[in-house]
Length: 301
Image (cartoon, rainbow, N blue to C red):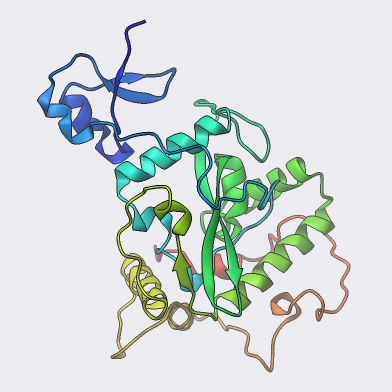
């Protein structure tokens, strides 16, 4: 087999690269130049591969499948927002390659008919004392496991039942245990969302990946709020800084949704240790009303 002249082509630029003469290798799942000297393809010339183990990466962190919610104060400022699309493609390729093209949570491979793909997911450590969110692992997950991991987003997209079923199937949790796990994940999310986190991506910079300068801790919640407001069409009526929590509250007011207050918290909003015992009638996803996140963030029709 003739040695390929590999290219680094982000997904969003695949049509441009194809028009410039790039070809797709379905086995390697990568674009290449069919011959030397194709100057039109120079913008996608391949950079050296990223090493299989990033400096300081902990490949044991967060094994298995679990709900892993990102604090709202950290939304929209993550690895993908801080690296170029080409560098993200290099990282994604390394992650799927070292995983043997299999999901590291359930072992599934890609299935085009099932619309199941292999995707990169970030595992973080949160230092409460220093208020630092540090990237410690990049993991390969299939679409189904990734949907479970971002359970709140699954609710917004109307995929909660599917996510819940996949969680119980992979982890072998019974319905009650799975629901308690989800409740605990949301309680942790609420606590972490009140903190402004400094972003630490040193495992990437130490591996030679060039980063755009991450926003300061003080600006991250503002970025989250501004991006969320732009996506949902929420006007910024008040001058000055608006954080993600304020945007959530404002959308709730516009939708007529009553958010729990510290003095009138419902058992659903309380940490699991403080919540009164309850015997669920149906241990699966609560179908009697849309989830709070879904009701807050769904688009008006």
